[in-house]
Length: 274
Ligand SMILES: Cc1cc2nc3c(=O)[nH]c(=O)nc-3n(C[C@H](O)[C@H](O)[C@H](O)COP(=O)(O)OP(=O)(O)OC[C@H]3O[C@@H](n4cnc5c(N)ncnc54)[C@H](O)[C@@H]3O)c2cc1C
Image (tube, rainbow, N blue to C red; front, side):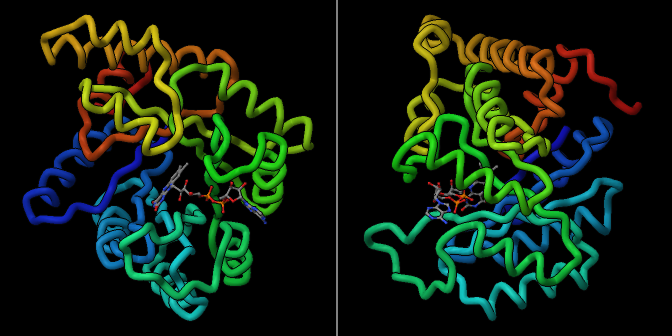
């Protein structure tokens, strides 16, 4: 079980994240991960949160690192900083190219595999990679997507998936990897929907479709508390199906809040430390 956070921007948000981590620590996650802003925009803040978790809690932290928009010298500095801070786990990501209107960024990298080369060379880190059950939006087709993912996983230790809402997406992904001789652990990413505004943002963020029946189930509810409860219930059902299908664990996109994750844990009867 693992939980994902993003680096907070303000002192208030930082305190709130500290509370969230304290509330989630008794759930004894295998690790928590901290996202990284495209092109290094959160470099400092990601490192602060990751090293704080390492220093102040009993939880193992993992730093996300995207390579697009970075030079090799910058990546080398970042890896050196993490090694010296005792960080042992990196999620190696391609990231996204600068969008229209953004400053163009100098980049020595195009794909996550290029970053894996440099992380491997340090010979210190365990390496995770991203997987996209519903196929990455920039992949020309499903087969090419799976082949690039398999190439990453031959060299990495495990994968975490983009979020999705129907268990068959995960089952099919694992079967397709098995057909390419890949049996490394793939952790399904879980994003509980806790309000209606999230639904529209999902597809634009990740390409993950929210299934019609789930949208209808949530849109029938007018009270925000009922929407939240139904979203948690749907996520619980998804988690139960994934564990029954053999998923080796679950990775929760917490959005820096603990309640939904704790409720799902409770619903699934997962143990917590008192
Ligand atoms: C668990 C998870 C965590 C994430 N965390 C962050 C984060 O912290 N910060 C952030 O900015 N983004 C994050 N993302 C988003 C991610 O950066 C984007 O989805 C990005 O577009 C792809 O990342 P990737 O690592 O899958 O890229 P890649 O593995 O580089 O793949 C990107 C595309 O290129 C293709 N490709 C790969 N290798 C090759 C090759 N050799 N030749 C041709 N095509 C190739 C792939 O098939 C795919 O279509 C995360 C995504 C996931 C699933």
